Amino acid sequence: MTLTERSMLDLTGRVALVTGGASGIGRASAHALAAQGARVIVADINETGGVETAETIGNAAGFVHLDVTDEAAWCRALDYVISTEGGLDILANVAGIGTGGDFEDLALSDWNRMMAVNATGPYLGCKHAIRAMSGSGRPGAIINVGSIAADRAAPDLVGYCASKGALRMLSKSVALHCAHKGYPIRCNAVHPTYVDSEMLDPIADLYGSREAMVQAMSRLVPLGRLAKPADIAAAVVFLASDGAAMITGTELFVDGGHTAGVPPSHFA
Image (cartoon, rainbow, N blue to C red; front, side, top):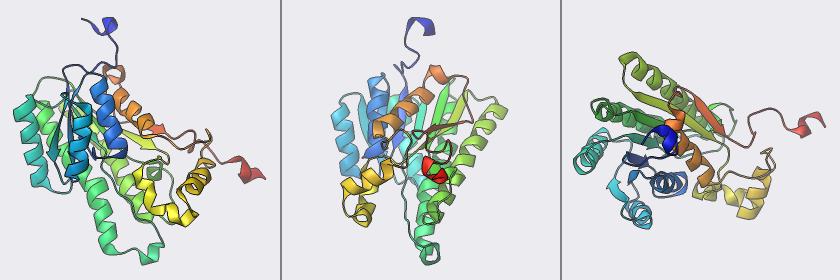
């Protein structure tokens, strides 16, 4: 069957590893990739949530415990994927954390943790996934989930913005590395606006309630709502698919127009 005879989003026969798969964007991405025919290995440090994600997908999914900041853990996870699935075709680096507040009060431990999860984790994933993919003879795709914070700074998210900015350039550089080496591996980044997921829960009290928080954040997005995990998952599927075969080293902003320009109130 040729590409024109099937959906360009069809991922049948491909193996995907999704980090941060226990919840939010990671869970939605695992489901979306499986829905297009991929065999999905859910990876997370949260074993309970990760196993639940795999179980809700069914026979098309499995789980592997992974601390993305630990290089040895990455090696074990990819050895598991290759030994059980025969190879790796897609890596979605979704795991991420954020800590906000006054920059002058930002603890070094919080800075280091954000850099470890948001930048070092994807670096390790890209490094070892390339080695796993490059010898397979099949095309590979790496998708790094960043944030509009990679493109728009915020005074109360200095560490988070810095870590996502690092991820942005990692993605571009990895794409060029693979092209330079002649590897059939693409690398791209997805940058969401605010996503209505568990990651926002810790800051809900700052707004008085979660509903008030969602309403306030939604007013900052031109399309008038927060993104859903499924919105980001759809972008992950596209960049993993043959529909994106000529796309590498680029960024897909799934932000409802958030980064397109200044809000109307700027001119009031």
